[in-house]
Length: 151
Image (cartoon, rainbow, N blue to C red; front, side, top):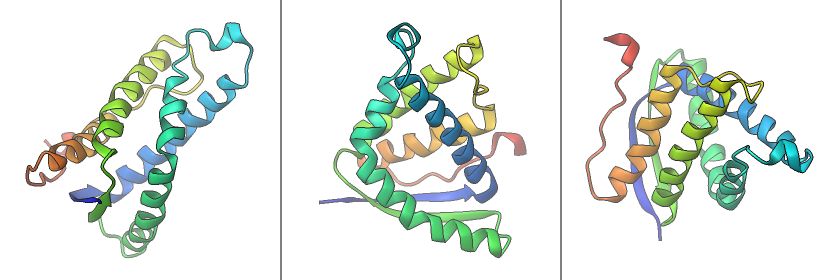
């Protein structure tokens, strides 16, 4: 059984840049997991554990949305609405990821990682994206993304 989630007014370019940054961070955490125990001791390897646990759902989501984003970029559309059918565990995964990505950003800010901390506009998009999943599973109506830089 899935729940339908509608993400409204997703900024195409910002979403792509956020995705690229997130991949950089995940690659670095993957390398950390291969390191010695002393290096791994303080790192939030839980982030990769959460990602691995939810990878099948994330992969399906990425495959389904990749084409939509590619078409939007080709047509120079600044925004896209996404229609997603998500599994029952999506809200828990979203809550967990929100906390862990914020924690990972702290490591980046302190200089414990090579990856730079997530820029504020990507954080705003990440929070909105993950919070929308939780909100809509709770029965609330979709709210469009509001770009903090457009204020």
